[in-house]
Length: 266
Figure 1 (cartoon, helix red, strand yellow):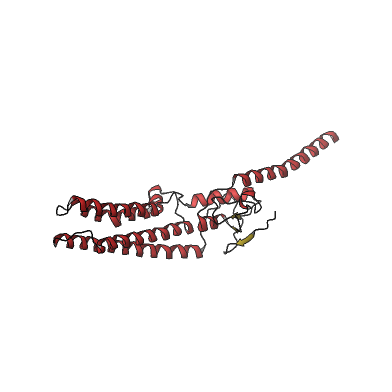
Figure 2 (cartoon, one colour; figure 1 turned 135 degrees about the vertical axis):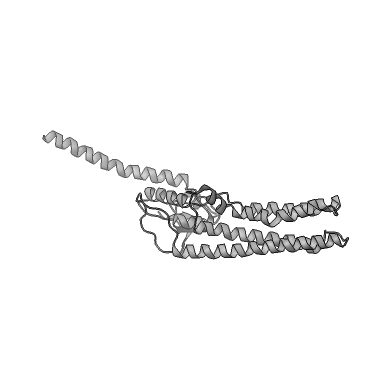
């Protein structure tokens, strides 16, 4: 299979054949270390967001108690800072889960780990919103404006923290086995910068269009890590199945012929 596109091999150690039934995905030591670093930085960013919220509440109460408008640059600036910190922390946390995915054996912990960014969005904004909306010294217009700003920030942070394509050990294991079954025991696939599927063939028409200038080659797990791609190209899958059937059929025909020949001798 050939292509005139630039092929970039993703770094990392070669993976052994994992098509045996006992195989379970295990992240490399390097990826596990990276995941731990990302999680540590994510927690630090989230702690910073909580601190920003505390200061926003203090500035809000200080302005209210002194008879000033709570809609000021300090409060709004701290809300924006809170949003930036929560959002950045969620991006790192989701990246860590792709490098070192959780198991689905404990469903509660699995969902918590994958959706922790959403939880932290509520932790970082909900107390502030409650303080704004329940304060009796603030007029309705100021509550509406400041509450809306904080509410919009909460929604943006929640969207940033939501993981629609949750990674798991079981998912990585199943998809790796599937690729190897179709790909003669080899765990490598191809994908592009903006594609939503990985491919078994680098000359697949879906990744050889005129807008494609670079094709990445790596394992199923690396496709998850780099682009969070978990979908196998239907065209490649059908082509691989057809190729495998063509290989199996001659073997069956030869076996059948040998059986008939033996029967005739007998």
